[in-house]
Length: 462
Image (cartoon, rainbow, N blue to C red):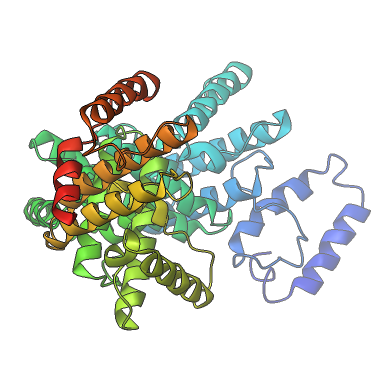
């Protein structure tokens, strides 16, 4: 038979048919036995004499899930190539196929679909294995060996990364695996091996009292440098060259790839980074999806600023809270920018505006015209004294102006007189302004208005 399976399958098929026709295989044992020869053939190639069917291993005929069969057979071949026909390897493969066959018959998920999945998926697999052994008796399946073959960590010796790193690493790995088909075994191993390396590095950082990966991966230049220095030290202590894919993790969190970064205006960089860091400081270590949202937005903002710089347009921050004409020109540039990118992009100019202390354009106040002129003029004069790097001071100016406009809007909606008409008026007028401000704070909460600065500015203008 062995000489004819591949060389002369037609004549062998005739002999098999004659044997069956003779009635000597009344219990159909030959069909079962011949099925085991399928694993001698090249992967994906049918042995013509035997016919189609599963590539069986072990003494009993099991029909596992196709994705399980591929992994089980591949692991068995790998072990056979290293150790020869070791009975333990063959027995393991048979038991693994038997377990997968049971899962399939019971309508449970396959081994491979849960073996390196979420904690819940892995727990459900362990629970199914417990039920399987209750039904079939004690059977060694060696799930841990399959897990390692797929590139995942052995559960007998796992690493213990920082919790925020674990969320990030598992999230990226699951996202990558979800893109792969069930037969992409080699690619799945690459993903799982990378996750092991990342968890191993985070474990080392934690044991040595260094900051986590995620806390520094998209932080300041100094934080990112310290992370690289720690990785360099970590690699001197491992026996083989190791990769942790920082850039892929960075992109997963929504930050720009350091292999292809944008180059925005310096004043925009300070504003964008300041806003992003402020938003990130509000999030807990398990807010991975929200962190991605913040970093994606920052990436889009840097991309827009880079486009403005390359095309000789003014920076975002120089026009974001400027005159009506400047703000209109910024919107026009953004409209033109979006026509040149392949996907819909959001830069949230309004949130940047509020970060600088200016009013949201989605919900603006409507002060008296004379108040608006005075408030805007004072704010512009204050801003003209500040450099582009004075982000925090610029925010103070705009927040104060926003409070003043809000108070004037409140006065107008309630039929009270404007700020400007009473600011340097009679004692009675100034007293009524103070009284209105007290009423305003009772309605709207405490807001700093700085009447003294407005009064001085009005006096200078007069």
